[in-house]
Image (cartoon, rainbow, N blue to C red; front, side, top):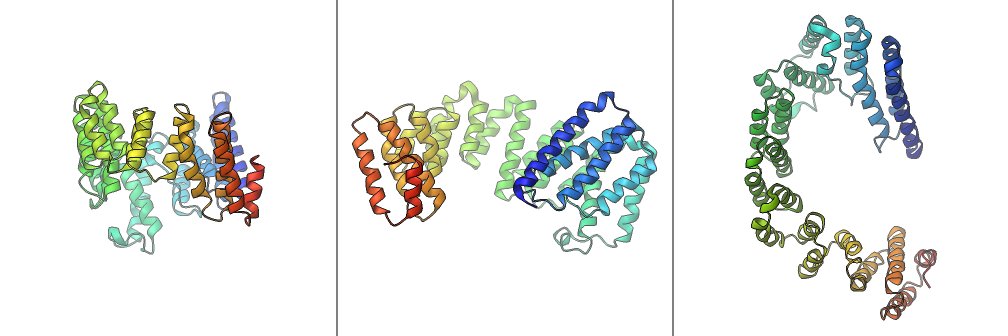
Length: 391
């Protein structure tokens, strides 16, 4: 239940899975399957009581879940026993936030086993009564059962390579762009590339905007791989619709040698979003002087972006960064917060290092003295200053 202990245990779990995977070539498949299944059962008991906010234990569980169907196939696990285990795992388990993929289990189940598995799902569906509406699914008495049945229906549509079933189960009622992306990704799995591109493009017009942008990014990635001749125009469309540092970066990557054709438009558009303009110039264009000029011209007020830019510009003109460092220090000390005191003290120590031996050194020393005096009634701040080696 303690975060640090949970993280340490999760790390050991990953090491154990590494050992298991490394031993597979020389291990009897039945023994390997038995060990993996017991390990998964144990892992689920652990995660039920652990603070897995870091996700380390959950990732170890997923590794075992991915390994399980492969080992079931190698071991020739009896189909009836495997079907029962799959159903119990999904419907009779206290831990209900992991899914099993029937596509992965198809080789182990074979045609007859898969038919048996489908029949059990159909029987369960019958016992639940009428299917709730999409917006009532989570408030349904059997919300978990319906979620799991729908998940299986989507994966079985992929297994069947059934285009219409994929659209019906993945796109659902078409209210959100994420479902169009789900549909596109399912088509990728069955090698229907053109349909995947079409459905990703469709998601751009559905909303909400953040999901539409994800659909646009996926559409552009598909075009870059399969239709590179369309990539530039697609990225222009996306940037003009959702101007940001990320969509500008996508256009820059797609444009390649043609980038000068679009640079003025991109930088002019991004001037309305100072943080994006500066971040794009620094991270994508790798033009630190340009990023510095934009930050000043556009009155950038984002402390995180300034901090990252200062680190880069210190290699260009370290003394020029001192006034901006001072602004960030004063901002850190406006609130009574120990973490911000620590950040401010470390920044002052850096300023001393930059200014050492220059005409700016007396000014930095005077600033530290001023801040010591101004905040003399803040003992934690004074302690952090001393811990950072400030006079």
